[in-house]
Image 1 (cartoon, rainbow, N blue to C red):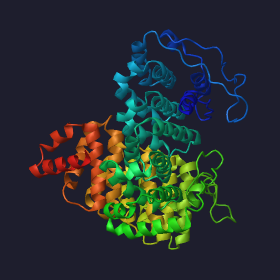
Image 2 (image 1 turned 90 degrees about the vertical axis):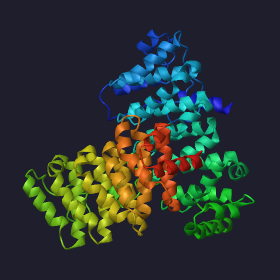
Image 3 (image 1 turned 120 degrees about the horizontal axis):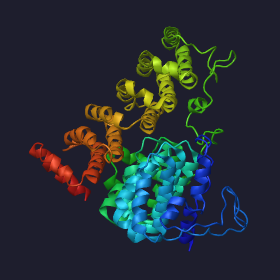
Image 4 (image 1 turned 180 degrees about the horizontal axis):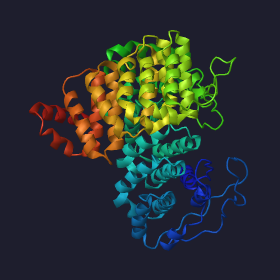
Length: 579
């Protein structure tokens, strides 16, 4: 009964208030979320419900955000007399460039999921690929409704969605790093439906592959939270005495989470580690599955948890007004109220003086700050650059190459305080400039990864991974694939592992729309990684191989056939261990 009620809730999408969208979008979103069926859907045969008028809450139903008073389920969507036609039309609408038609197609798709499962199942792969693309839609209203539609599919198709869990969960987890709090809430709800209705082993693997090794702490936290709930539902006996593909992977992942640098993912990792430690063979399984270098830290963590318990769960800091998200560092919090330079303020919230219109003068003044012998002046220069990205972006873009030559020097200098500040500043700059940074990526990516992904300073390492995550979230991923692949080949240590795993994520995102690019860049990386390797590199290589095999199918072996025989042998051996 509880599951049926939760299914009803996910189909009754809350009204959105998206202030940044164009005039008229809010009304359309409200219409899409009400029970009034659009004219096009009505033409397909859907009946219209008049019980909810646009913008007005029905009697007996509390307004948005209220948790008191009687509630009733809204009238459900009616069946289509010609569901095959509705199915074709919904995909056509979703592929439209017009956001209103996309919303209309998503509304029809939800009705099909609830009333015509048999019609939907033969096209499920196409439907899920279309939804994954709309989850990434830059228009927040469309993205949010696509996320909710995936929740409806999990709820009504249940285990029929198992084959699509990897792809859809990865897209949802990626959105957990969004600044829009409403979208994050819908992602959380959709993943909750996935956990309740899909096969546990599929869900566990989706979280392990798509979330726990993500560069964003917000994504790792989201994946860890749902994984913790899922493990407790499955039970420790089934988890550690079940299939090898789950048992061998779950312990290393949980230990990594329990030692995570960010407090929230670490909290859920510790919770799972304490839960798994109740298994009678836990000590021997720990020794068997955990690399030697991590074993002592894992045992120490288990001992501390058994002696002292979990302690208090860290709370996410309150979001800043209008941001929809909490920031991880002082600098990141300041970026939303952009730095200023008032006389009595060390770091300011407005640009200093009038905006400079002369390019040569702008570069001269920025050079004075960023090349000062006093590191505090160089940090002030970084603040000024972030402020200019917000208040004077056209000047920064016109001066892109000289400005980022100066900025790169701050990433590469020997002062760790300046390095850390520059890496954190870069995260805000990427969010502000987005694809305008494409011209300097070949300078930025090496400056981030060469010096800082192997840093023993945890703050610097976390800031570097955060900068890479912002690049992935805000730039066209096809621009990142080549530099990531190149650096994954030539670097060593943790940097190599992180970049291989990042390439695996890009493969899943890019292959459906840029298959030739992925095969051209990612396959040579995989061929070079096959063969004997250390534990962490081997696990990352397995993730990359799994991603390519998931997308290419038999084509992966066919591509290997054109390589030296050793490549084919090593690939077949790796694929056998994955099966």
